Length: 379
Image (cartoon, rainbow, N blue to C red; front, side):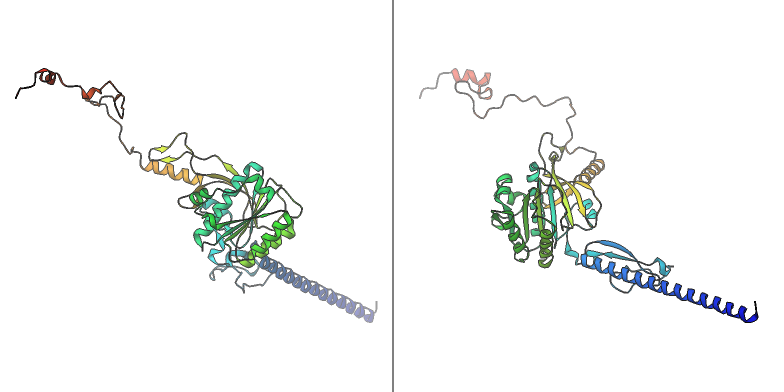
Protein backbone atom coordinates (compact mmCIF):
# COMPACT_ATOMS: atom_id res chain seq x y z
CA UNK A 1 0.00 0.00 0.00
CA UNK A 2 1.35 3.36 -0.99
CA UNK A 3 1.64 6.17 1.55
CA UNK A 4 -1.22 7.90 -0.21
CA UNK A 5 -3.47 4.87 0.16
CA UNK A 6 -2.54 4.43 3.83
CA UNK A 7 -3.34 8.05 4.61
CA UNK A 8 -6.72 7.74 2.86
CA UNK A 9 -7.60 4.64 4.84
CA UNK A 10 -6.61 6.38 8.06
CA UNK A 11 -8.82 9.34 7.12
CA UNK A 12 -11.79 7.03 6.44
CA UNK A 13 -11.26 5.31 9.80
CA UNK A 14 -11.26 8.63 11.66
CA UNK A 15 -14.35 9.79 9.78
CA UNK A 16 -16.16 6.56 10.68
CA UNK A 17 -15.22 6.91 14.35
CA UNK A 18 -16.44 10.52 14.40
CA UNK A 19 -19.76 9.49 12.87
CA UNK A 20 -20.17 6.76 15.47
CA UNK A 21 -19.50 9.21 18.29
CA UNK A 22 -21.99 11.69 16.87
CA UNK A 23 -24.58 8.91 16.51
CA UNK A 24 -24.04 7.82 20.11
CA UNK A 25 -24.34 11.38 21.35
CA UNK A 26 -27.54 11.82 19.33
CA UNK A 27 -29.01 8.62 20.80
CA UNK A 28 -28.05 9.67 24.33
CA UNK A 29 -29.58 13.11 23.85
CA UNK A 30 -32.74 11.56 22.44
CA UNK A 31 -32.94 9.15 25.40
CA UNK A 32 -32.49 12.00 27.86
CA UNK A 33 -35.23 14.01 26.17
CA UNK A 34 -37.49 10.97 26.17
CA UNK A 35 -36.85 10.37 29.86
CA UNK A 36 -37.58 14.00 30.62
CA UNK A 37 -40.81 13.80 28.60
CA UNK A 38 -41.97 10.57 30.23
CA UNK A 39 -41.08 11.92 33.66
CA UNK A 40 -43.05 15.12 33.03
CA UNK A 41 -46.05 13.15 31.74
CA UNK A 42 -46.07 10.84 34.74
CA UNK A 43 -45.88 13.75 37.14
CA UNK A 44 -48.72 15.51 35.30
CA UNK A 45 -50.86 12.38 35.53
CA UNK A 46 -50.17 12.19 39.28
CA UNK A 47 -51.21 15.82 39.66
CA UNK A 48 -54.46 15.25 37.75
CA UNK A 49 -55.39 12.19 39.79
CA UNK A 50 -54.64 13.98 43.03
CA UNK A 51 -54.83 10.90 45.25
CA UNK A 52 -52.27 8.40 44.00
CA UNK A 53 -49.01 8.39 45.96
CA UNK A 54 -46.29 7.74 43.40
CA UNK A 55 -42.54 7.54 43.56
CA UNK A 56 -41.20 9.11 40.41
CA UNK A 57 -37.53 8.49 39.76
CA UNK A 58 -35.96 11.78 38.75
CA UNK A 59 -33.69 11.85 35.70
CA UNK A 60 -29.98 12.21 36.13
CA UNK A 61 -29.05 15.72 37.10
CA UNK A 62 -32.59 16.70 38.05
CA UNK A 63 -33.18 18.70 41.19
CA UNK A 64 -36.31 19.30 43.26
CA UNK A 65 -37.82 22.56 42.11
CA UNK A 66 -41.53 22.45 42.97
CA UNK A 67 -43.82 21.83 45.92
CA UNK A 68 -44.32 18.18 45.06
CA UNK A 69 -40.72 17.35 45.90
CA UNK A 70 -40.00 16.06 49.35
CA UNK A 71 -37.63 18.25 51.38
CA UNK A 72 -34.18 16.78 51.72
CA UNK A 73 -31.54 17.32 54.29
CA UNK A 74 -29.00 19.75 52.76
CA UNK A 75 -26.20 18.09 54.74
CA UNK A 76 -27.00 14.62 53.45
CA UNK A 77 -24.68 12.97 50.99
CA UNK A 78 -27.00 12.43 48.00
CA UNK A 79 -25.97 11.98 44.43
CA UNK A 80 -28.14 13.39 41.62
CA UNK A 81 -29.09 9.89 40.49
CA UNK A 82 -30.57 9.11 43.93
CA UNK A 83 -33.06 11.97 43.86
CA UNK A 84 -36.63 10.68 44.05
CA UNK A 85 -39.74 12.81 43.78
CA UNK A 86 -42.57 11.62 45.98
CA UNK A 87 -46.05 12.59 44.85
CA UNK A 88 -48.40 12.36 47.80
CA UNK A 89 -51.61 13.51 46.10
CA UNK A 90 -53.74 14.73 48.99
CA UNK A 91 -50.76 15.68 51.16
CA UNK A 92 -50.93 19.12 49.56
CA UNK A 93 -54.66 19.38 50.36
CA UNK A 94 -56.00 21.16 53.46
CA UNK A 95 -55.83 19.26 56.77
CA UNK A 96 -59.60 18.74 56.78
CA UNK A 97 -59.59 16.96 53.41
CA UNK A 98 -59.98 13.59 55.17
CA UNK A 99 -62.86 12.30 57.26
CA UNK A 100 -61.22 10.58 60.21
CA UNK A 101 -63.26 7.70 61.61
CA UNK A 102 -61.57 7.64 65.01
CA UNK A 103 -60.23 4.10 64.50
CA UNK A 104 -56.49 4.63 64.32
CA UNK A 105 -55.79 1.46 62.38
CA UNK A 106 -58.30 2.17 59.62
CA UNK A 107 -57.37 5.86 59.38
CA UNK A 108 -53.69 4.99 59.11
CA UNK A 109 -54.41 2.37 56.43
CA UNK A 110 -56.39 4.96 54.43
CA UNK A 111 -53.57 7.53 54.79
CA UNK A 112 -55.65 9.79 57.01
CA UNK A 113 -59.23 8.63 56.51
CA UNK A 114 -61.89 8.78 53.84
CA UNK A 115 -61.63 11.68 51.37
CA UNK A 116 -64.38 14.19 51.99
CA UNK A 117 -64.70 15.64 48.50
CA UNK A 118 -64.92 12.34 46.64
CA UNK A 119 -67.07 9.36 45.76
CA UNK A 120 -66.69 6.55 48.32
CA UNK A 121 -68.15 3.11 47.73
CA UNK A 122 -69.59 1.08 50.60
CA UNK A 123 -70.27 -2.43 49.41
CA UNK A 124 -72.44 -5.13 50.98
CA UNK A 125 -71.96 -8.62 49.57
CA UNK A 126 -75.45 -9.91 50.49
CA UNK A 127 -78.90 -8.52 51.15
CA UNK A 128 -78.62 -9.37 54.84
CA UNK A 129 -75.78 -6.82 55.06
CA UNK A 130 -78.08 -3.93 54.07
CA UNK A 131 -78.56 -2.89 57.69
CA UNK A 132 -74.83 -2.88 58.40
CA UNK A 133 -74.09 -0.87 55.23
CA UNK A 134 -76.79 1.69 56.06
CA UNK A 135 -75.65 1.95 59.68
CA UNK A 136 -72.05 2.53 58.64
CA UNK A 137 -73.11 5.22 56.17
CA UNK A 138 -75.17 6.96 58.86
CA UNK A 139 -72.16 6.79 61.18
CA UNK A 140 -70.06 8.59 58.56
CA UNK A 141 -72.80 11.19 58.18
CA UNK A 142 -72.78 11.67 61.95
CA UNK A 143 -69.04 12.32 61.82
CA UNK A 144 -69.56 14.91 59.07
CA UNK A 145 -72.32 16.71 60.95
CA UNK A 146 -70.22 16.65 64.10
CA UNK A 147 -67.38 18.53 62.39
CA UNK A 148 -69.21 21.03 60.20
CA UNK A 149 -72.52 22.84 59.81
CA UNK A 150 -75.59 20.71 60.34
CA UNK A 151 -76.85 20.70 56.78
CA UNK A 152 -79.43 18.21 55.49
CA UNK A 153 -78.44 14.88 53.93
CA UNK A 154 -80.11 13.47 50.82
CA UNK A 155 -80.61 9.69 50.53
CA UNK A 156 -81.45 8.58 46.98
CA UNK A 157 -82.67 5.15 45.95
CA UNK A 158 -85.13 3.26 43.82
CA UNK A 159 -88.46 1.87 44.98
CA UNK A 160 -86.94 -1.61 44.82
CA UNK A 161 -84.13 -0.87 47.25
CA UNK A 162 -86.38 0.90 49.76
CA UNK A 163 -88.90 -1.92 49.57
CA UNK A 164 -86.17 -4.50 50.18
CA UNK A 165 -84.04 -2.72 52.79
CA UNK A 166 -86.55 -0.33 54.36
CA UNK A 167 -86.03 3.14 55.82
CA UNK A 168 -84.06 4.21 58.91
CA UNK A 169 -85.96 4.53 62.19
CA UNK A 170 -86.42 8.16 63.23
CA UNK A 171 -85.79 7.64 66.95
CA UNK A 172 -82.75 5.53 66.22
CA UNK A 173 -81.33 8.31 64.06
CA UNK A 174 -81.30 10.72 66.97
CA UNK A 175 -80.28 8.21 69.64
CA UNK A 176 -77.41 6.47 67.84
CA UNK A 177 -76.17 9.09 65.38
CA UNK A 178 -77.37 12.46 66.63
CA UNK A 179 -79.23 13.08 63.35
CA UNK A 180 -82.54 14.86 63.56
CA UNK A 181 -85.27 13.19 61.47
CA UNK A 182 -85.88 16.39 59.50
CA UNK A 183 -82.19 16.46 58.48
CA UNK A 184 -82.42 13.21 56.50
CA UNK A 185 -84.25 13.66 53.20
CA UNK A 186 -85.27 10.73 50.97
CA UNK A 187 -85.74 10.68 47.21
CA UNK A 188 -87.44 7.57 45.83
CA UNK A 189 -86.88 7.27 42.09
CA UNK A 190 -88.92 4.93 39.87
CA UNK A 191 -85.90 3.90 37.76
CA UNK A 192 -82.17 3.64 38.20
CA UNK A 193 -81.64 6.23 35.47
CA UNK A 194 -83.71 8.74 37.47
CA UNK A 195 -81.79 7.93 40.65
CA UNK A 196 -78.45 8.53 38.91
CA UNK A 197 -79.65 11.85 37.48
CA UNK A 198 -80.90 12.96 40.90
CA UNK A 199 -77.60 11.97 42.50
CA UNK A 200 -75.58 13.92 39.91
CA UNK A 201 -77.68 17.04 40.41
CA UNK A 202 -77.54 16.74 44.19
CA UNK A 203 -73.78 16.08 44.24
CA UNK A 204 -73.07 19.55 42.86
CA UNK A 205 -75.07 21.29 45.60
CA UNK A 206 -73.19 22.83 48.53
CA UNK A 207 -76.40 23.13 50.57
CA UNK A 208 -76.18 19.40 51.43
CA UNK A 209 -73.79 17.89 53.93
CA UNK A 210 -73.60 14.60 51.98
CA UNK A 211 -75.37 12.59 49.30
CA UNK A 212 -76.14 8.88 49.66
CA UNK A 213 -76.97 6.82 46.58
CA UNK A 214 -78.17 3.28 47.30
CA UNK A 215 -78.10 0.74 44.46
CA UNK A 216 -79.07 -2.92 44.44
CA UNK A 217 -77.26 -5.51 42.35
CA UNK A 218 -74.87 -4.79 39.49
CA UNK A 219 -76.78 -2.74 36.90
CA UNK A 220 -75.11 -1.91 33.60
CA UNK A 221 -75.89 1.80 33.89
CA UNK A 222 -73.70 2.05 36.97
CA UNK A 223 -70.48 1.98 34.98
CA UNK A 224 -67.22 3.91 35.00
CA UNK A 225 -68.77 6.84 33.13
CA UNK A 226 -71.60 7.30 35.65
CA UNK A 227 -69.30 7.00 38.66
CA UNK A 228 -66.77 9.38 37.09
CA UNK A 229 -69.48 12.02 36.82
CA UNK A 230 -70.45 11.51 40.46
CA UNK A 231 -66.83 11.70 41.56
CA UNK A 232 -66.22 14.87 39.54
CA UNK A 233 -69.34 16.55 40.99
CA UNK A 234 -68.28 15.61 44.52
CA UNK A 235 -64.80 17.05 44.04
CA UNK A 236 -66.19 20.23 42.54
CA UNK A 237 -68.68 20.82 45.38
CA UNK A 238 -66.33 19.68 48.14
CA UNK A 239 -68.96 17.30 49.53
CA UNK A 240 -68.86 13.50 49.93
CA UNK A 241 -71.01 11.14 47.90
CA UNK A 242 -71.49 7.66 49.37
CA UNK A 243 -72.40 4.90 46.94
CA UNK A 244 -74.10 2.03 48.79
CA UNK A 245 -73.99 -1.21 46.82
CA UNK A 246 -76.32 -3.97 48.05
CA UNK A 247 -75.88 -7.59 46.96
CA UNK A 248 -73.73 -6.76 43.95
CA UNK A 249 -70.46 -7.90 42.50
CA UNK A 250 -67.42 -5.65 42.99
CA UNK A 251 -67.02 -3.90 39.66
CA UNK A 252 -64.71 -1.12 38.45
CA UNK A 253 -65.85 2.32 39.60
CA UNK A 254 -64.26 5.76 39.82
CA UNK A 255 -64.47 5.74 43.63
CA UNK A 256 -60.97 6.11 45.13
CA UNK A 257 -61.98 3.94 48.12
CA UNK A 258 -64.18 0.86 48.32
CA UNK A 259 -65.07 -0.54 51.75
CA UNK A 260 -66.72 -3.96 52.07
CA UNK A 261 -69.12 -4.03 55.05
CA UNK A 262 -70.74 -6.78 57.07
CA UNK A 263 -72.20 -7.00 60.54
CA UNK A 264 -69.93 -8.15 63.38
CA UNK A 265 -71.09 -9.72 66.66
CA UNK A 266 -71.57 -7.11 69.36
CA UNK A 267 -69.39 -7.44 72.42
CA UNK A 268 -71.03 -7.59 75.89
CA UNK A 269 -71.65 -4.34 77.69
CA UNK A 270 -68.82 -3.03 79.79
CA UNK A 271 -69.51 -2.46 83.49
CA UNK A 272 -67.34 -1.56 86.47
CA UNK A 273 -66.97 -5.24 87.34
CA UNK A 274 -66.20 -6.22 83.73
CA UNK A 275 -68.21 -7.43 80.72
CA UNK A 276 -71.85 -8.20 81.47
CA UNK A 277 -72.53 -11.74 80.33
CA UNK A 278 -75.46 -12.20 77.97
CA UNK A 279 -75.80 -8.50 77.18
CA UNK A 280 -75.65 -6.75 73.79
CA UNK A 281 -73.14 -3.94 73.48
CA UNK A 282 -72.44 -1.32 70.86
CA UNK A 283 -73.03 -1.83 67.12
CA UNK A 284 -70.04 -3.47 65.44
CA UNK A 285 -68.94 -3.69 61.81
CA UNK A 286 -66.43 -5.77 59.92
CA UNK A 287 -64.75 -3.37 57.48
CA UNK A 288 -62.51 -4.61 54.67
CA UNK A 289 -60.58 -2.31 52.34
CA UNK A 290 -61.55 -3.69 48.96
CA UNK A 291 -59.92 -0.93 46.90
CA UNK A 292 -57.88 2.11 47.74
CA UNK A 293 -55.35 4.25 45.90
CA UNK A 294 -53.39 4.85 49.08
CA UNK A 295 -53.75 1.62 51.08
CA UNK A 296 -53.23 -2.11 50.92
CA UNK A 297 -56.12 -4.53 51.52
CA UNK A 298 -56.93 -4.99 55.19
CA UNK A 299 -59.74 -5.93 57.56
CA UNK A 300 -60.84 -4.22 60.78
CA UNK A 301 -63.58 -4.72 63.38
CA UNK A 302 -65.01 -1.38 64.43
CA UNK A 303 -67.46 -0.45 67.16
CA UNK A 304 -69.62 2.65 66.94
CA UNK A 305 -69.72 4.73 70.12
CA UNK A 306 -73.06 6.61 70.06
CA UNK A 307 -72.03 8.82 72.98
CA UNK A 308 -68.71 10.01 71.57
CA UNK A 309 -69.93 9.73 67.95
CA UNK A 310 -66.80 7.99 66.75
CA UNK A 311 -65.51 4.55 65.79
CA UNK A 312 -63.14 2.48 67.86
CA UNK A 313 -61.19 -0.56 66.80
CA UNK A 314 -62.08 -3.57 68.90
CA UNK A 315 -58.53 -4.87 69.26
CA UNK A 316 -57.28 -1.53 70.51
CA UNK A 317 -60.22 -1.31 72.91
CA UNK A 318 -59.61 -4.80 74.32
CA UNK A 319 -55.90 -4.03 74.69
CA UNK A 320 -56.64 -0.88 76.70
CA UNK A 321 -59.12 -2.79 78.88
CA UNK A 322 -56.48 -5.43 79.68
CA UNK A 323 -53.98 -2.71 80.54
CA UNK A 324 -56.48 -1.03 82.87
CA UNK A 325 -57.26 -4.30 84.62
CA UNK A 326 -53.55 -5.00 85.03
CA UNK A 327 -52.95 -1.52 86.43
CA UNK A 328 -55.89 -1.82 88.89
CA UNK A 329 -55.98 -5.44 90.08
CA UNK A 330 -57.96 -4.63 93.27
CA UNK A 331 -61.71 -5.11 93.05
CA UNK A 332 -63.89 -2.04 93.31
CA UNK A 333 -65.98 -3.57 96.17
CA UNK A 334 -64.25 -5.99 98.53
CA UNK A 335 -65.92 -9.34 99.10
CA UNK A 336 -67.30 -10.43 102.50
CA UNK A 337 -64.68 -12.10 104.65
CA UNK A 338 -67.18 -14.27 106.60
CA UNK A 339 -66.34 -13.01 110.09
CA UNK A 340 -67.79 -14.15 113.47
CA UNK A 341 -71.08 -12.31 113.05
CA UNK A 342 -72.13 -12.60 109.44
CA UNK A 343 -75.34 -10.91 108.46
CA UNK A 344 -78.35 -13.25 108.53
CA UNK A 345 -79.79 -14.35 105.26
CA UNK A 346 -82.74 -12.25 104.19
CA UNK A 347 -86.08 -13.96 103.77
CA UNK A 348 -88.97 -13.16 101.52
CA UNK A 349 -89.63 -9.42 101.24
CA UNK A 350 -93.19 -8.30 100.51
CA UNK A 351 -94.34 -4.78 99.84
CA UNK A 352 -97.63 -5.39 101.68
CA UNK A 353 -98.60 -8.23 104.04
CA UNK A 354 -101.21 -10.67 102.81
CA UNK A 355 -104.76 -10.25 104.06
CA UNK A 356 -105.49 -12.09 107.32
CA UNK A 357 -101.87 -12.94 108.12
CA UNK A 358 -99.97 -10.11 109.81
CA UNK A 359 -96.32 -9.84 109.20
CA UNK A 360 -93.92 -11.35 111.73
CA UNK A 361 -92.72 -7.94 112.85
CA UNK A 362 -96.26 -6.83 113.74
CA UNK A 363 -96.78 -9.52 116.46
CA UNK A 364 -96.73 -8.14 120.07
CA UNK A 365 -93.94 -9.19 122.35
CA UNK A 366 -94.64 -11.63 125.27
CA UNK A 367 -94.45 -8.77 127.80
CA UNK A 368 -97.04 -6.74 125.99
CA UNK A 369 -99.56 -9.55 125.62
CA UNK A 370 -100.42 -9.62 129.38
CA UNK A 371 -101.04 -5.89 129.43
CA UNK A 372 -103.35 -6.24 126.49
CA UNK A 373 -105.44 -8.81 128.40
CA UNK A 374 -105.95 -6.59 131.47
CA UNK A 375 -109.33 -4.96 131.80
CA UNK A 376 -109.48 -1.27 131.01
CA UNK A 377 -109.54 1.01 134.04
CA UNK A 378 -112.94 2.43 134.91
CA UNK A 379 -113.41 6.21 135.22
